[in-house]
Amino acid sequence: MSQFQPYLLSLGIGLGVGVIYGFLAVKSPAPPIIALLGLLGMLAGEAGVQWLKGQTNFVQSCLHEKSFAHSASEDDAKNRDAT
Image 1: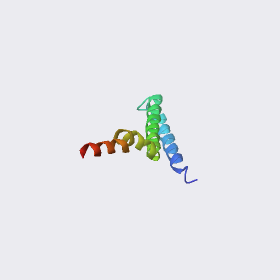
Image 2: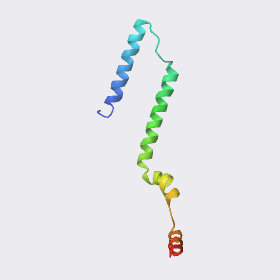
Image 3: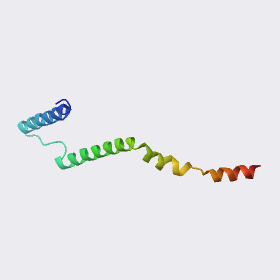
Image 4: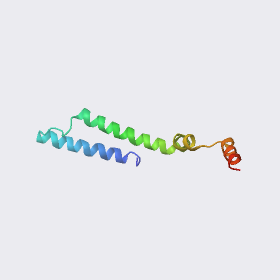
């Protein structure tokens, strides 16, 4: 139950605010579809960052290995040219 507690709390608070808005006849500050799409984007971005953090080999290969890698034959050729 504890893993669902934050979700249930958030849902309960949202329902409470919705009831208050309903009694006061106040419109939501953001259109519901726009707000939900924004939240979806935030969740997708957060999930993407967490996925990239877990993929250290993937990130390293994209950022470092291909752009800074030197083969042994290149290093040998440079050493031979220097002598």
